[in-house]
Structure formats: C-alpha cells, structure tokens
Image (cartoon, rainbow, N blue to C red; front, side, top):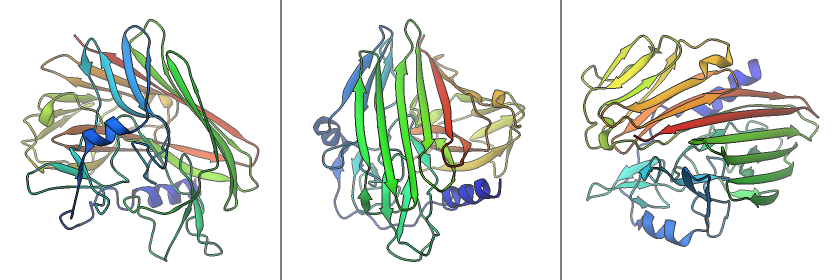
Amino acid sequence: MKQIAVALCLLTGSALAQPVQPMPTASAPVDELLASSPHVEIANGLIAARITPPDLDNGFYRGTRFDQAGIVTSLTLKGREFYGPYFERTAPDVLDYTYDAEGAVVAGPDSAVSGPVEEFAPLGFDDKATALFVKIGVGILYRPDDAPYDHYRHYDIVNIGRRSTRVTKDSISFLQTLDGAGYGYTYEKTLRLVPGKPQLAIEHVLKNSGDKPIHTTVYDHNFLRLTPGNDGIRVTFPFAVKAATPPAADLMRIEAGSLTYLRPMKDKERISFPNTGYGASAGDYDIEVRDLKSGASVRIVGDQPIVKINIFSIDRTQAVEPYIAIDLPPGAEKRWTYTYTYTAP
C-alpha cells in the first residue's frame, strides 16, 4: 500500500490548487477542433455517442495528462446531451483552464477534454537514473528537469507504443502495447453501449508484461454537463459523505449520503475538495448525479474499491472523481469496469 500512497501523492499533489497563469496570448474555438478531429459514432438504438480516437497529429485530445483513448465528446439519450467540452476555446500556453477577456473558458492542451476521461498516476517519474517515465494510455514521456510531477504540465511524448482500434456498431476498443523506460504492458479499453439499455460500459484490461511491478492509481474525471451552473444538482453516495474542505454553505448542502447544489455557480467560481466516508468494499463505488429540476441523471457503478474521491465543479461542468488502486507484479493482469446508466425524462 506504500506504493499506492506514493502514486496518489504524485497524481493529486496539485489537483486541488489550480496553477496561477497569465492571460492566453492567442486561442482557437473548440468548435473548429471538434469539426477537424477524427471521430467514431456508435449507437444502440437508445444512446448515440461520438468518440475520438488517439491521434497526435489531428486528434481532439493530444495532451499527456489523461488516457488519450476513447474521449467522449457527445452522448445523447432522447435528445438529451450529457457531455461535450466544458470550454469554449483552447490555447497552447494555458495550464489547466482560464478565462479570456470576454469570459470564455480557455483550456490548455492537457485539460481540454470531455466526458468520462481517465488519468493514471505516472510510473517511474522519480527514477533519477533516467529522464523517461510512463503514463498508461499516453506512452513514454520525457522529464526535462527536477521539478515535481505536475499533471497540468505538458511533457514531450517520446514513444506512444503500438496502438490499434476496433469498431463495431455499438462499441469501440483501443489497444496499446508499450515496452520501454523500464516498464511493459498491454492495455485494452473498450467503450460499449449495452444492447437494449441506456447504459455505457467502460471495460479495461491491463497486463504487466514487463519486469517491474506496476503500482499506480487511476480515476475518472467524469466531466458531466446536466444543467448550466449546476443549480439543483444532487450527488448521492451509498455512504455518509464527509467533505475535508466543504464549499460555501450557500452553494452546497452536505448531509448524510448526498451533496446538493443550492444555487447556480457564479462566473469563474470553482470548487474542488476531497470526500471521505467510503469503505473498502466495491459496493461504495455507486454514485448518482441527478438534476432535480429535469430528472435527468447518471448512475456510475464501479467494480473496484474506492481509494479516494474528489469533487470538482465550475459553472460549465460538474465532476465526481473516484480513484481506484492498481498493483500488478510482472505477468499479472487486472480487469475493471465502470457502468454508466443514463436517465432522460
């Protein structure tokens, strides 16, 4: 568990404090990026989803923070949109996100994502014998100096490994095989629309094919867009929620197993805080986010125990971020699945 604690520190050390940054010198509309980047559309008769594959030259997401495979830029049920970019513009010199002079949200290359995106803690970042380290779902990256790992920072990609994609009418699978920087693995991620149900299953298979153990964590950022400002959003858990640093009392009510937004979030208002209260059972990975006004909701069920949860929101998006631990000796394999059930009255 010591290795998992180290991985959590690496991944979350700067997660709660957004970096201070200047106004971007130039930015581009996200609509242009969406229109020009490759995408795949899948459907099951209830849900239609638009998913972008990894592409370092023309892809929608080319950052080094999140798993590049399977970015969901749209998912609709009964005409109701659940995802889509939380930002209006992008700029290469922005860390995380900021606002331009007109008040538009401008995202940097490593945070310009959409939907249920995942981030793994880095492997081998503190190994002083090499300047190379690994992020699963991205590849082998270059550490240019001795500064601590910062997931808002963009690192040069040295090797993406071998990638392949398989598409059916209701699913898309991504395979990445990588060997280098002291690590080796095969990682398959499948986004599957469950036949006859308003559900998306995100299935993972990670096998350690190298000589070093893989100790890491992964979380899903879950950039959800149910209603502007998040007014009337309620997040429920199967355990009593305990917020380490709760937001203002006029913004959110925290009681028993729920968080309720009491008013619209203000322009440029931001909350980010960890929750506790969960136990060691995978049964605690059962979270619902509901718009009390419209009745639209998403239920997220995982099959692994939670090791950390963070809540993040700005007025454009609401995010519940559950973390799980991965501890694989050489030759071992881990499978895990998140199941999303959507409701659109």
